[in-house]
Picture (tube, rainbow, N blue to C red):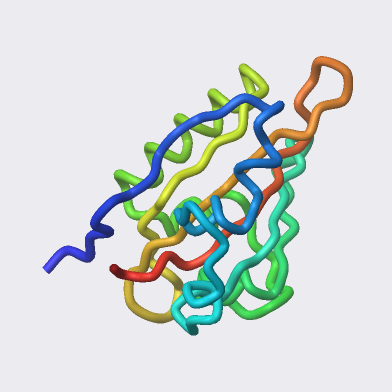
Length: 149
């Protein structure tokens, strides 16, 4: 049986709107900051990540390693990380990533991943480009497990 997230998120947004997409209420798809959803153990493993576009090197917090079922501090190439995405999610992520870099836009995506250890799961990926002048030099953001509703 295929592991499906009931209402996946998949969209692009302008950089001037970044603050709203990184606010706690928006991260988890809630309209208000009701404390109960965030206290739930279902909302765990919120981690920070970045990807330097000069060499595609990744920088992950401990929680991102946990999400992908990899030992903390392991050397992981972008190609190895991308290989852990289920194909439809990988294709959507790559499309949004290219668009984000080309048009200096952030994006949010619910992606199914196949961790190195453990069962397939859904992760929310929130990404925003870091620009120097007109050039995007890095993508950074948050990754966290999306609870099944």
